[in-house]
Amino acid sequence: MITQENEKIAVDCLKAVLALIHEQRYKELNTVVDEIHYDKLDEVLDVIEESIYPYVIDGFDPEVKYHLYEMGDKKSFCLDYPLTSCGVGLSGILFLVFEYTDNGLVKIIHTIDAD
Amino acid sequence: MEQHKLGIKPEFFEQLVRCDWFCNCGDKSFDQFEVIIEENQEHGIACLNSLVYENASLEKQNDMSFAVREVPIDWNDVVEEINQSGYIGKVSKRIKSGLKMKGIPEEKVLTMIRWNVFHLFMANYFSEYYTDTFYEQMLQIYLSGHLPCGYEWKKFRVY
Picture 1 (cartoon, helix red, strand yellow):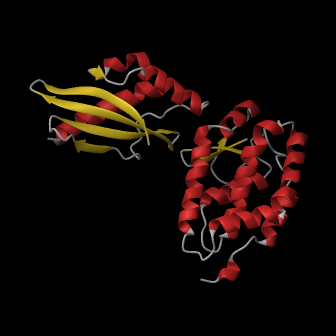
Picture 2 (picture 1 turned 90 degrees about the vertical axis):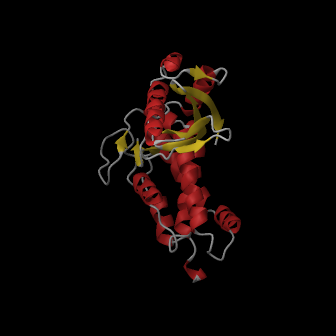
Picture 3 (picture 1 turned 45 degrees about the horizontal axis):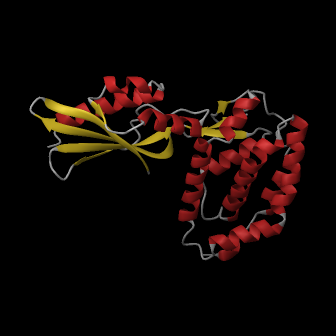
């Protein structure tokens, strides 16, 4: 169940992930999540950054609306967040998944998809 | 809806033809509204051609076409009318001349500038029914002799 506490954990995780992406410190992403499911995430982020040069992907922007929803199996919930640069949409969505476990939430970077 | 109010306003076209294109590029003289000043030509060109600026322009174009969907004229007919009017060609000559005078490489910027100027014409065509500060500010920047080369956090980057 997506409680207020779980939402806060998810948003804090999102902020940490975006802060590292913004600074192009992709190798450190595994320090703020437990798992990264997306194969070659570094390369994908590199391609996005190259495509928007000289701009970079923004950190967390409170004006950008994120979506939280329970997954069908009720064992996890998802947070999706549209990537932006300087407040402009980039046609890419970051998906984070949070699995419920007895020891708390497992934080996962699931994928980056085209909008 | 009064269709006769649609169309390019002659004074708009005259402004663009009389404009001293790009004469103030590279200085910090712009003070008409809040912008991000860009002094470096190379960086300005990179920003102008960036996907970020293109996305911002596309979003504004979509806003305009959505806003005028009730206007009883086909969007594609307006595009054709403007393209066949000769307006863009005449303004392009002035743009090319301005770029040459200022030493801005035409091959790196002309396509994007033409694209933006074309949408200024579209915005002017529908101006009785639709306004957006994005196009109003873009026009003011061009008329002031600068180049709008980016759009960041809802502010133009100006070279």
